[in-house]
Length: 367
Image 1: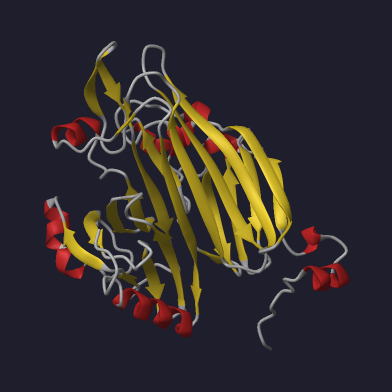
Image 2: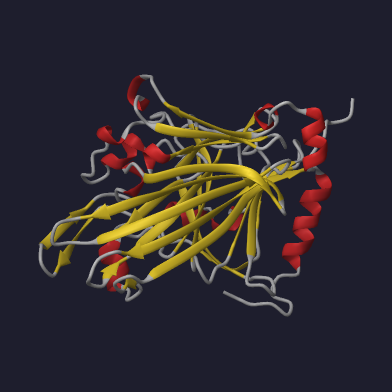
C-alpha cells in the first residue's frame, strides 16, 4: 500500500474533513503527573507525520518529537520536570534536563557553572547552562489558520530572566509548522530589556535519539574546520562523523565546527540512518549562530547525539570573557535567530542534501 499523502489545499480539506483538527492542529494542555505536574504544553501535529510538544511551562522548549510514530528526540531519565524542581547550583541543572528535541541553554550563562564579577552585585555564581529552560513563559498564544502559504500552526511565548540590580533579558519564541510538512521553524528574538549593557550567552541543545541514532548512523555537514578540546574528544576526532551502538562506560565527546554556507548564508547539518532511510536536519545562518558544537554520548541509557549551535561555545561565562568573545546586548538591542528543523525521509532526500552540502562555499560564504 502506498503511503498516504494528506490533502493540503483549502478546498480539498473543506470537502474531506469536518474539522481541521481531524488532520492537523495544536492541542493545549497542562501536564498532570509526577514531577511534570503543572507544566503547560502544546502538542503540534502537521498531518505530514510529524508530531512534537512545545512546553511554554519550560522555557518554550520542545520535548517529544515523532515522525510516523518513530521516536526522533532523546528523552533523558529525568523526564519532563516542572520549574519548581530546578536547582541552579553548580551542575544540578542535569536533574531537570529532559533533553527533548530542543533545550535552550543560557541566557546569562551557557556552559559549566562558574563565578563571575558583576559591577553591582560583586562575585555572582552562575549554574550550569543557566535558568532559561526552567522558566515558564508568559504572553503564550496559539494560532492556526489558512494563509497564502497553506494551513499554518503557530505557538508563541516570552521567557524573561531578571535580577534586582542585575540583568533584564528576554527571549520571545515563535514555533511555526505547516500542514503536510515534516519540518518546523523557530524564530527567537533575544532582547535586553534593561538600561545597561549585559552579557548574552545561549546555545541550543538539539537532541536526537534512537532509532535515527544507531550503529552506523553518521553526521553530514559542510565543516571547514573541526577540533576538540578534551582528551576523550581528541581521541575520537578522526571518527567524529560515525556513530556506534550504545556501550557501557563510554565517555562523552564534543567536537567544534566552523561551517561553509550557501549563497544565502545558510548551512545545514544532519544525522542520517541509511538503514532506516531517515535523517534529522538543522538549517540556520552561522551569522546568527557563529558557534557550533557536536555532542556524542554513546553510553547505555544515555544514548544521544546533539547539535549545539549558539552565540557561544559551552565553555562558561568567565571563560568566554577571558577569551574576549563574550557578547553584550545594549539596552533594547536584540539578537535574532531563525532556524528550521526537520526530517529527511527516503534515499532521494538524503542524497539531495548531501549534494547540496557538497556545493557549499562554491560562490557562497565561509563562516
